[in-house]
Length: 124
Image (cartoon, rainbow, N blue to C red; front, side):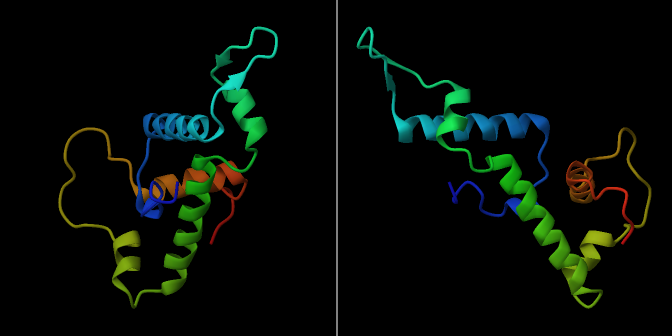
């Protein structure tokens, strides 16, 4: 599972990506836990998602990604202006914007994660 999370602190993910990661996680757990044997009929059936969360109740992959991303953002915020990573995070490029909707940025994901945790209304 750790191979999937390599570099996840810098990802920009959408709801589609979240669904795909959750599908991957469920598929991996189904391979780990195997099929469930029904005692009455003696046949093997696939484990349902609710049963998977009962078998493995630790935080899901999306929660883990969000916590890693917030930890990285705290680290970058405390680096200060002396490093290039901070300048990339808070910098504003010069020039004209292209037409259309603004692109989703890494900072937008951090703000959404903070609002989910309940820290969205605090000012740094």
